[in-house]
Length: 267
Length: 299
Image 1: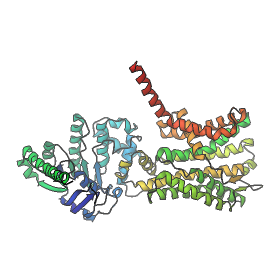
Image 2: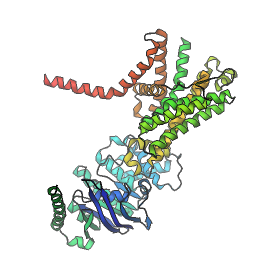
Image 3: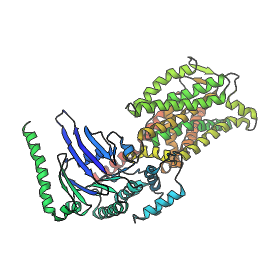
Image 4: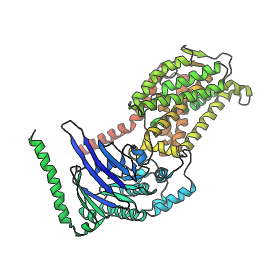
């Protein structure tokens, strides 16, 4: 279970570019939740993910994962149990290393004992092969290929596998299909659902696709101005139409626009 | 002629250790580590001073450890104190000048007269004839290359490679980049120190200024090797390129020395030009291609 209490983050405090990215945000995510998150640009979605992943330290507030306060834990330690995918498929893999080497790095997280000088074992090799087969992209026959030569869709699929090969306590998906062509995006979306359901992974997914937001997972949040302005559970989502959601979305967005206008006119 | 070839091969083998160190820092970690010059002299100073006191083997070991310590200082400045990587190397390098003087008993050079070195010990075995120096450095070079190749496919080695390849993914893979950068720089400077230690005992002397330009020569031979062997295609090739490139560089050096095509004083300038051109080559080629196309299409 993930608990976020009164989380605040202000960028460039005290300057003309001051921006409240997270404004006293509270959120409880239950185990097994698959939450989709909506919000206009600048609503604080990615900032929320960065705070959870530990990219920066929040100004105030607490982040508690499975009863452990991780607010001050550095990002590389959190990544032992928080998996993350970005919009940019190039971000999650090392281009000059082979598919197998990339998977071996991801699998490091499974190590209880840290034997720095061990190499990829035959057993692990077979396990990587089996996992790659599940992607149905033929990557299992190209394990010694450098990742830099793969397509964006293939790289994102590999990144997804790397993030989940050791099932994380929490999976953060930051518009991870937005930079892909429609066919690849569908494929990655299907793979994501399949993997999340199979592993019962608790998952947060940012998306700009309102249909997808209502159809995927079991709960939908909408963010605006660093707050959660809408929290729909599974039942409520069934009775909500995309048009209603769009209306709320525009309200949230225009609120921000109005704020901007005030800012500009007061200059 | 044979003597020239022998010298070129010997120097090529021993200095390939610096190329190997730069391969780790510059290619694998993608960090220009300027600790190299001072670190080389540190290895030399420790090794020769210990040999002068009658402990040639301990000297080589001290050279490796000393090099590693120098690498650690650079890494510490860079990862823990936020000093930019190039500056961190320069700062360490400057500090090392004093440390090196200290290691040589506050004098600018130390010479070995009758004391034995690991080279004279191997010579006295009488197996290798006049090739005894080559035999020693060849064993060190090949063992180091095998060690590096093995290391880079271990988990720690993979983590270090990923750090240089994609910083974004590293912290998302539960790898601490501060640790991997430190490990990589320490490893690289161990090899630089070892090289200094071997060169010192081979020449039977250590000099405070012996390290000047070592980093550029190392880079030159790394790049020559990569070009000749098409070395950037795999790790194994790239490691082999360190040795091949250095031997080629030493042969060029020997030819210039013998034929006097160029005055010998020009050699450092030549080396600098070679390195600059080699690193600039992709950019120059791209610019030329654009210019050519432009000329064709405006006609």
